[in-house]
Length: 98
Image (cartoon, rainbow, N blue to C red; front, side, top):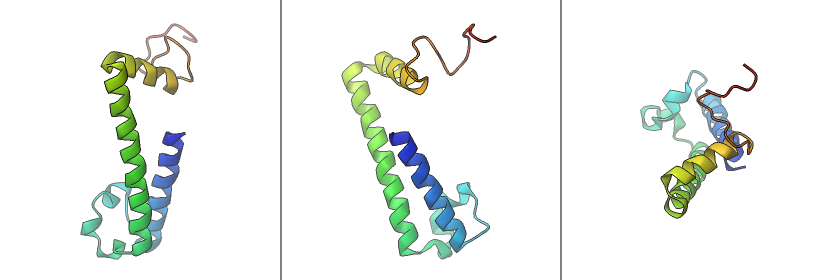
């Protein structure tokens, strides 16, 4: 759910930035101080919302690492990313469907 929120907010930030400066790339938006046209209160608000969502994600990841330990936290994250299928890995190596 948090990843969906982050993706939606990131898209909103990029869309608003491109309304202000149509030629901006996603990389440009990471350096807003280089683009005076992004000195817009609405854009700063949306970018701040994105920063907050990212901060929550990092805090939860850190908490999970503290509570579960690094290996268990990584396994739990991989299970979640793979829709709860144990043993599935994003790096491949599984024999299913090959």
